Picture: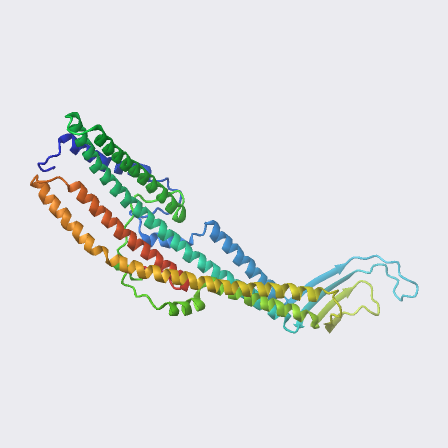
Length: 446
């Protein structure tokens, strides 16, 4: 129960209502209708949320799946050029035979089995196969980049919910303190101990904190909706588990930050966007080789077994042969294709340089930010110790009825805890962004 103090029973009831009634509102507002067969854990954990980064029914995942399927189909089409083609050809034909033809049959029908195999095309088919293989590798790298960025979005959304809850708690405590202050000021005003100007100032302060609390409550709902959209549209757990920094070394202040030059070297080898660009560049080079090979002959083998309704001198039962197709003139199509592909190649080379430059800039910015956050995360310890002592002192004085600043102490402590949580969450997201740029594993719970 409440210890004996200067607070009246009415003040205690008001503080109780301000602190605990909104929690019942949150509990009734945020449980959303479940639409998926798999229920979310209660409380929701960051580990589970990150495991939802590869939801198969998301529009982006469907898009990448479709692109990968089309690229695989292109590879199969290119490889099929070196395969064996088998056809059954037939014809039903009536003829009025010439008198000089030895056969007087009018039925000139034919049924044949034709087998075709390309033997050599001077590397054209091989180049198209290699180009499609590079396309698949490019799409897979883009997919890897998408998944890593999706994990970052989920992590950011998850932390935003936790911060929104902490901001609300701080705003709620601040409003409770301001309300008690306003109630006292109104009592003094009724006794004509203060002026109406002083009362108006305190009332305005209370209205501001009340607006802040209302905005914080809205932010709670908005952040939860955003997280729900990312991990399970239409459903979300009521409570979220706050991750322990000590259990997430790769996202914590204890993780060592390498020299920025070493990070550049790692990114050049493993950054998904850069790898995707390089694979695309490689694909276009193979396509250019294939186009250039179109001016060379194509050597093929053909086999045929046929049956004829009318026997003639050219009605061979079996045929086998080697065919050579030599292109002599293609109306300028070959040169036009080479120019188009060469232009695309130059554009991709320029894009590759731009990606490298932007990658270096992003890594440097994150390197500096992480360095600052690691230092900042260590600084608040003194302030936290001070606020803990301040809270203990306030409790002691509160019970001794020397002063009644416990509410202010709780608000100060909440603000310090919020600042430290913000720093940790920002540091964790920065580490994740850096890992994404470096192409490193983001399985932080393994």
